[in-house]
Structure formats: C-alpha cells, structure tokens
Amino acid sequence: MTVDILRDVLSASIHSVSHSVTVYPVGVPKLWTETIEEHRREVRDAILDTTAALVAEHGLLSVTMSQMAEQTGIGRATLYKYFPDVEAVLLAWHQRHVAGHLKQLAEIRDQAGEPAQRLKAVLKAYARICYDRGRNSTDEISALLHQHRHVARAQQHLNDLIRDVIADAATAGDVRPDVDPDVLASYCLHALAAARIQPSEAAVGQLLAVTLAGIGIAGRALAGRERA
View: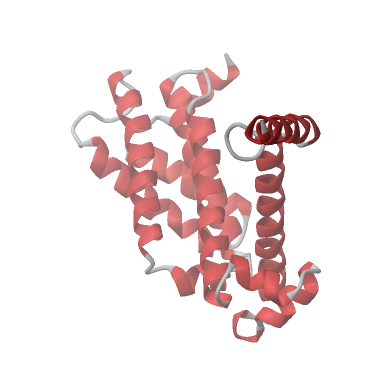
C-alpha cells in the first residue's frame, strides 16, 4: 500500500514538472541558436572594422588590444574570447577583405552577357581593386600578412576564376587561341597589379586597355558590342 502511494506521488510530481517546464527535444531552440550566432558575427565584425580604422589612423604598430576593446565598446575579457592577440584580429580582417573581393569578382563573372564583355568587366573590377588598395593605408596589414597561407589559396582561387572567364572568351573566338588560358590569366593578374602604382583612374584605364590588347581582345570590337 505504501509503495502504491509513493508511486502515485512520484507520478503526480513528474506530471506537474512536465507541465511547468519547457523541455527542448534537441538542444536549445534553433531561433535562439541563430540569434546567438548572429550576435557573435556582429561583435566579430565590429572588432574587425574597428581594428582596420585604428590601423588607418594610428599605424599598424600602435594598435593594442586595449584600444580595440575601448573603441569597439566591449570588455577586454570579451575581446580575448574572440581573438588571442592583435595579429589574429588583423589576420581575420584580411581574410574577410580578400573573400569580399573574390565574391565581388565572382558575381561579375556570373552576370549575363557575352564572354568578352564579362571578361572585360572582371578585369576592370580587379584593376580597380588594385588601384584602391594602393591608396588604402590599411594595405600595411596586407603587407604584414602577405606570406600567410590564406593568401596563397586566395591567389589560386583568383587565378582559376580569371582563367575560366578567359577560356570562355577563347571558346567564343574573342581571345587569342595560341596561348593557354592559365598563362593568359597569370599575365592579366600581373599586368593589372600595376594599377596599385598608377597616378589616376585614367592611367588605370590605359593599363586595362593594354592588357586586353595583350590577350587579343580588339578594343574596336568591344566598343562596337557595347554600343549595340
């Protein structure tokens, strides 16, 4: 009898708890998880943006973790949960920066249009990126991290992207067929990298025209297609 009473009491208690406490079948709710992840991304992006601004204003060697925390508006303990030191922050900033450029070029590559026009648009955008980089004081970060392995991966990705666009243009008969697209891609990237040291956008335009001529795209033919 006593056992039956205890069993009934336990059963009632469990039933009561199950109605008063929300039980999540698998971990925390998805919405909560997404909110937390979004918050972390926002904090991380704020740290990276603040660091880039500090480097631009004070120079690479003057930036400290204390400055980052103060300017971002978070505690140092929180900052260290995201990054162990200044170099780690700069590395993450540079990775995001490079990924953004690759995404921009890929979006231009995927636009509709004739192969020659898409090739010209991609190369023009790349030349502009190089030109802007030459005028950006945060390029000091790039110089510091130039030898990091993520740069080599990004460079290979970039070369592949340009090569594929060139190959499409070559198939369409718009690019010289006597040189391998890989070689032409390397030529374009090295030639347009000189946009960093050009004195004006007009000079960059001339550099682009010379590069396009070098891979066999006739300026008059392109101009005719643009007018059409």
